[in-house]
Length: 125
Image 1 (spheres, rainbow, N blue to C red):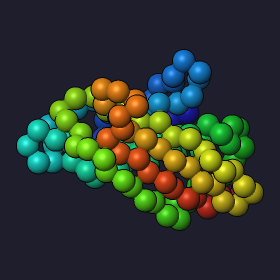
Image 2: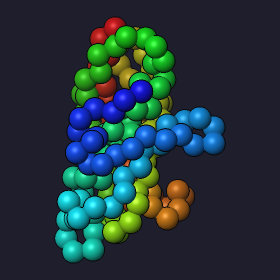
Image 3: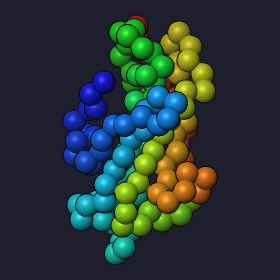
Image 4: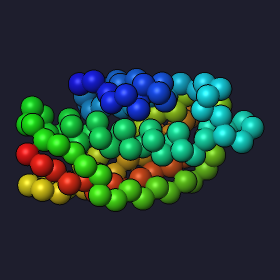
């Protein structure tokens, strides 16, 4: 699976966890800096959207589908520092026309997320 061009702009790479689920990684770069010492919230939001998209593509398997976001809600929990950030998505509902996906971003500890998102997608198969 290849990532969209926006992911390349953020410097995102795709990996998998021990269970084979996709994880998106964003190494810190000066281009991602918001206020001094912190990753810009837009970069974190974009990363969460890409993690959700990757999780949905993974859940769809080889099925052809156009994925269009309907709604995105992001909760910022703590500032992302100047270090590597990871994000993973989880499909909570995969219907015929609508998919609900959640995504979480963390840095040092997966159990202490820096941000989380809920996304609804329209699917055209």
